[in-house]
Amino acid sequence: MTIALLAAAAALVQATPAPAAAPAAKPYDALPGDWVAVPDDEMLVFTLGNGRRFVVRLAPSRYVPVHVDNIRRIARAKWWDGESVYRVQDNYVAQWGDATEKKPLPAGVVANPPAEYSWPAFDAVATLSKGDPYATKAGYSRDGWPLATNGREAWIPHCYGMVGVARDLAPSTGSGGDLYTNIGHAPRHLDRNIVIVGRVIEGIDALSTLPRGTGGGLGLYEDPKQYVPIVSARLASDLPAAERPRYQYRKTEGPRFAAWIAARENREPPFFTVPAGGADICNALPPVRKTP
Image 1 (cartoon, one colour):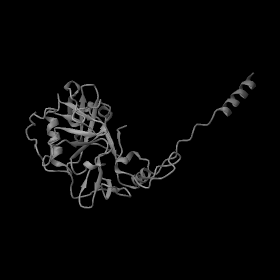
Image 2 (spheres, rainbow, N blue to C red; image 1 turned 180 degrees about the vertical axis):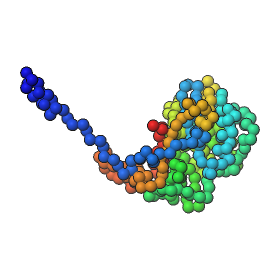
Image 3 (cartoon, helix red, strand yellow; image 1 turned 120 degrees about the vertical axis):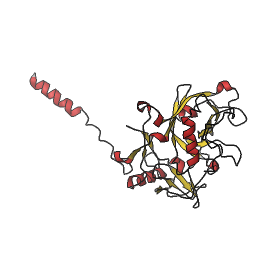
Image 4 (tube, rainbow, N blue to C red; image 1 turned 30 degrees about the vertical axis):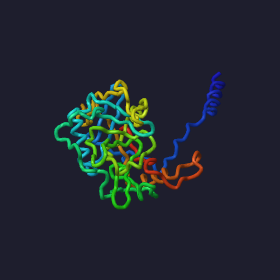
């Protein structure tokens, strides 16, 4: 009996497949040290009346100082509490703020800041191999933002999930009280025409899946009952520590990130059989992840 059991056990071991080997590391794979925490005061947390939330990472103050300062003041004044998402235009934008356009701005907010659409320095630390119809060169800042340039000025491009400041006709630049995010094909024609102040890094689906509006050909909700209420909007730095979202962006310097760019420009087999030889910056946005 013992011999038979041993033989059966040996046969079972031989029949059990060996554990699958771990996938080979790619040269563009991020290592733990390649991730950097997004600072708490760069994250703006919106909670909606339907229970959903989304998180906006604010753009660097060196690019859009007055608009970003306005947004921090607006958030700290709790100005967005009780306002709403009132416009959702298919393949374009979801917009929120004061639908009446009559609510006074908080003290210290500049109603019509400078036109912070672009700036002189293209301070990218890594670049794509090619430009595109909207820019001669595109790349990445040291703190994980996509950038574009025409050789004279630089700007953050209008990609999916970017957050811009709604405005009237020029010379209006928008205070920052009414914001929108791109929920469709990247509207790059808006580059250098509207201020980009952030990027949705969590919960874009809370906006992109909302019912489309029909008003004015602009996706406005015609019935105020359609408005999606904003319960609160807070800087993460003003929330209790346990409630703060935790995110990281990937470092954009070094050979591993350069390899990541190359992989985005030339997708790999077996699915991809024809390399593109380049990429639109909006198809190669800097990676952001939840902190493990």
